Amino acid sequence: MTSTTALKTVRTLIAPDKFKGSLTANEVAQALAAGLRSAADAPGTAGAVQCELLPLADGGDGSVDAAVAAGFTRHSATVAGPTGLAVEASIAFDGETAVIEVANTCGLALLPNGQLEPLGASSRGFGEAILFALDLRPARIVMALGGSSSTDGGMGMLAALGYRFLDAAGEELAGSGRDLSQIRSIHHTALPDLAGTELIVASDVHNPLLGPNGAPAVFGPQKGAETHDVVSLDAGLNHFVSKLAEAGFTDAAVLAEHEGAGSAGGLGYACLLLGAKQVSGADYFLDLLDFNTRKDNCDVVITGEGSIDEQTLAGKLPAAVARRSGPRPIIAVAGRSLLPKERWSEMALTRVYTLAEYTDRDSSKDPELSASLLRRIGKDIGTNLL
Image (cartoon, rainbow, N blue to C red; front, side, top):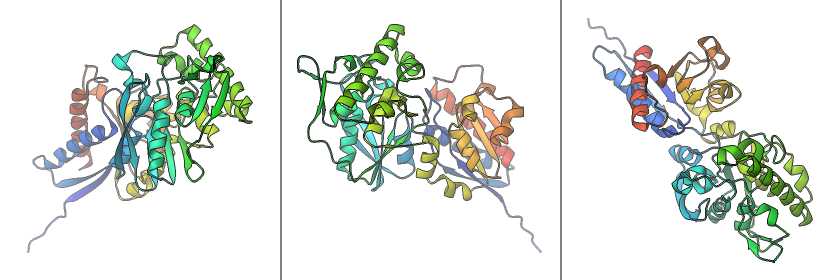
């Protein structure tokens, strides 16, 4: 009589965010999957690993790529980059929902030669992406606001949509942080019809537009703003708000104080003016990419991001993934972790693997090294699971 033993099969859902500066979320997921599968192929291993890949985003850069990886179709559009030079932007669309992002239209990474433009950068390209998305006739547009290079309050975006900002001489202003204080009147021509399209702002930034916690003070320095630039931008945005009120936006001042108005250099504010609904970026994208259904079909969830720290605990993507994953084991992978082992339970994590444990070199800006280390980590995870 012959007896057979069924092979052990472990179903994994690999659902990471990007490793900023190094790898996209899809590249992270692919490297981990390759390592997991190699563990199953090792001699003497009596088991198999099934890998479902779900690269994630939380409303920042990489949101379009995450939607495309989940089945959306990529569309390309030529728009004005942050300094006015044309750039090729990507939009994701599934027949109902369009996803556009600041990062690939007017983001920091698109600044020529990496030269920061704290006063000169514009959000105009993001407005042009909205126009392109509207041509697809979506039921909703999801606007991912992370990675902005500008602090123009969305002036450039509104200019692209048909608002005309005139200076004291009656000349039209293009829209930038520098232009804010020059506005003397605001007019609008035939604006695109947004009535039938739901606008969603996906962001986990809670800052208002103005003041010590506003866009210039908190995020301006990251975009190259010196102390005097921060003062100038804050004054310019305050002037912008007053001129919008004069132009008929009766809730202009109230919306400037709204949580999230300061996201993406004030683009969040302009989106609110257009009637956009603001939602948590992490949770919205988990719903959009059908995370709950996918995790129900797996035994283990593997998530991660470049750095796991206090901000992660405060609600970043890996924390949202862990919160939704239920009783199954949750493994996190990161470039580094500032959380001691005794605090893993705060995210219900079974184990945290870091690239820093596998090398003495700095992998944060080395894609090849990061991918190699992730394959090694994936193999170790697979070995422990089988």
